Image (cartoon, rainbow, N blue to C red; front, top):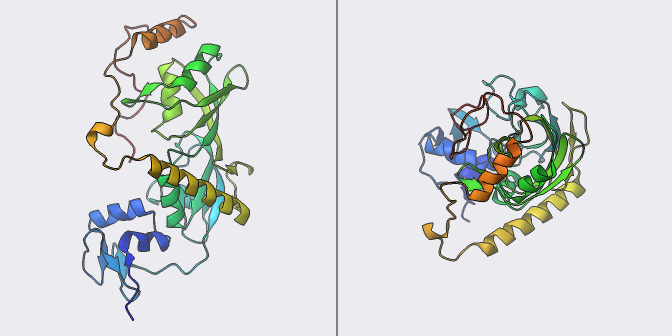
Amino acid sequence: MEEQLTRLNKFLSEAGFCSRREADKLIEDGRVTINGIVPEMGTKVAPTDEVCVDGKSIAANLDQPIYLAFNKPVGIECTTNQDVRNNIVDYINYPKRIFPVGRLDKDSEGLIMMTNDGDIVNKILRARNNHEKEYIVTVDRPITDRFITRMGSGIPILDTITKKCRVEKISRTVFRIYLTQGLNRQIRRMCEYLDYEVVALKRVRIINLSLDVPVGSYREITKAEMDELNRLIGDSIKTEEASLPKTPSRANRITPPPTRDKSANRDRNENRTERPIRNERKSSENERPLRNERRTPRK
């Protein structure tokens, strides 16, 4: 009888060591060995093989999967690198190895899922452009009807235009936004484009998972919640795959216009009339970076 073989990235994922994407990076960097040999990408392992990362043996995960809903405080970094100060793994100090599903900016707070199940990470990332996340955002000045309309209609950032989304005004300076994409610092960049600055940002829902624990605390996600989550992300993956062209090509990619259209410039100018601009200067045709933002992109 033949031994059952498992792709190396899947083995590391199922072992609860990291996500498949992170596993691919470890393999590419030559940090993984099978029986003392550095493997190629796509190599499969048998149950009798010894898999090591940085010389440390990785055992197959025989534990029950762990699913936690964590209310991340401001200042905590969503990284498994324990050399990073205020990393999420050390903060939670869970007795078993777990890692975050996705990211939440250091300056933001709210819901993030923690798990030892690499498969669920892979499924959620595959469905990332089809599931909804809900945020409550506080900005530095009064919200106008035009701001709500523009935020929901799509904003040009990061060489693309954000997807249309639902935006609701809660109070004078607070609004709720529902996103189905996750660009780097997306909400902050969208607000900055319209000359607003985010004062506080909290994620309160991921798909069917809601934030219902105090800041800095976590709870176990119930079986019923996980069953519903798996159903929803399964449906969104099928929808995404069905929408893909049979022969993908570079021609299928959407390239945004190199400059803003006249209506975008007019909206921007009209927004500026609502508040005197500090350190007034000529506007640029290119997108302005966030204030005090580092130029190096997050990995």
